[in-house]
Amino acid sequence: MNLFDTNNGASREEKPSNRPYGRESVPAPEVDYAAAVARAIEGDSASEVDYAAAVARAIEGDSASEVDYAAAVARAIERVPASEVRYAPAAASAAAPMQKVRPRSRVRRRRRLRRAIAATFIALLALTVGLYAFMAFFIRPPIDRGVFTVLIAGQDNVGTHGLTDTLMLASIDSENGTVDVVSIPRDTRVDVSWQGPKINTVFAMTGGSVDRLMGEVEKLVGFMPDFYVVLNLQAFMELVDVLGGVRLNVPTRMQYSDPYDSPPLHINLEPGYQTLTGEQAMHFVRYRTSDGDFGRIRRQQHFLQAVAAESLQIRNVTRIPALMGIFGEHVDTNLPLSGTIYVAQQMMGNENLNFHTMPTEFFGPDLAPILEPWLEIINNYLNPHPVPVTLENLRLYTRINGTIQLTGGGLPLSEGR
Image (cartoon, rainbow, N blue to C red):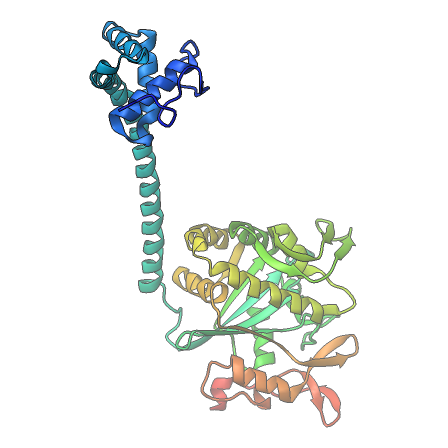
């Protein structure tokens, strides 16, 4: 058997090597011969590097015993045929101590890394499973009735208390797992005493009274909403940032500036699919063009659909504590903590999320609901009670007998049973 043929190891003349075994002082041919000896010992290409490095160091004479082995290898290199097999075990003995140092240290590092990765994965899995278990067993609907409603008001920075330019009434069916959200246009006229009687002014003109806002919404829909959530722009932006942004399609170039807003508003969004930060998302939902408030309502609904899709990602389950922290600091609600989490789960992680808009017509500079289609939306998608809403339960401006007038109703639904 020739341990040093051209297949297993190059001779000095035929195939010198530049492999970086050992230190720079080790001649390249010796390293090649060392690798050849390693192959003879193991017959395993995976071990060539370790054996070659060990024998290369032995050739340098790192210790007294290694020097002896180096001489044995040197004699083998001189092609003493009868001694080749005997010198191979000698080289193996020289290589063995080296294998116990370097390869095992690498193995230990790899094992520690694998253990760290496994521990991290197990911790994340435990956290996720724990959150799901918490949500499944402790997060319950905030009311025993199968269907309940939540008024959602988005508050801007105008004045002391802000205008509620975004107003939505959500009906959550906890039995069927569906959510219907109806947008109420900001310019809808309401029965109030001040100039500019629009629904978006009620909160600001009454000193930030949520009760008064809920009362005016009751006149429009025929029943009192069960709960309310009022969030400001700061809360909106922080919620989006905690989610890691929201990916959606910006349909067109959006440019708009309002230097009189507080702070001044400067919108500049490029078209196309992109991940919006909290500030960019705020710009997206506030942008208005010639399509007026209805265009903005469509963009707000499109944004909420994108948020729902984003929230379905499992990675966002671990962000629930941070989301709840923002709710506690910046959001005004009469929902209990467990109910807040339940509503957020239904609104932000539900594939059965449906949007509607109050049908209206112009009434001077304002808007008035169109009665018949509005009653259909109320009773088909909003009304949580078994008794249908009728005109007598409403007090709003609508067209009756050819003219828009204030209805004389407003009878609470509970009295109309």
